[in-house]
Image (tube, rainbow, N blue to C red):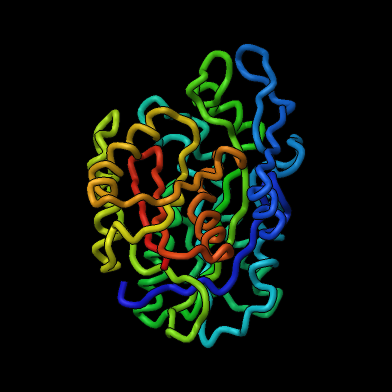
Length: 340
């Protein structure tokens, strides 16, 4: 990254609140909104999750994504100064159903790829508020949890080339959609009596507006990124450790000075094991003792919304010291960022 990325605006819709302040207040108070959906699993038990609004069959695909995303975008845009150039819109979306792993293949994957339509619908809504989003700057990143790190890298590249003055990163995951819940249950990924090592599904829209930092802004900025792809199954943590090292090296600070780690841990034992091994190889051997923040314990697993939400939490809370963001996708993508 040639220039740091300033977080100019934040917006959220989660199971804990319909905006950023309510979400943060609920997280601070230790609130949880896990409840049972109408959808049942293979054993006939109602699926429990942290859903942003009641799970109803009429809220699917583009309709569900739009209901989640648009209030978060409006909150993010509220009070923003007009950009001095084009605006990019980068939507961070779940992995295609047929590409997560061999056991995750599904012939109906193409039927659920409504994200290009979601992207265009959100762009039109933004333009209706007087901000032009050229078609060439409308991008979907379908890489799950770590998609936001690729989105940050794309925004930085657009800024370096002078193609955009700001970028809206929209993280969206609609785990509450009935078809998605049924699909995840068939894969044995959801927490239940049958699979106690699974995750609790959540859903959220998290939006951040990033701009090239000039040094005159207040608040933290994204200083560096780290991206690797894990090829081992189960993961051996080398790729996550490499992504962490990349982010720290690009930043130029010391691992020991990191005050916080914001991570997408979701209760799956394999994720915890990978993180512990990677942290031992990178942070703990440098005697770093950061506070670990993992909001999925109350928001549920929010998938592709993870990076924008974690970045939004860090930027809004303005903690002392520097923060390491760590995320991992089911297809092996590992993404990290330093926010300072």
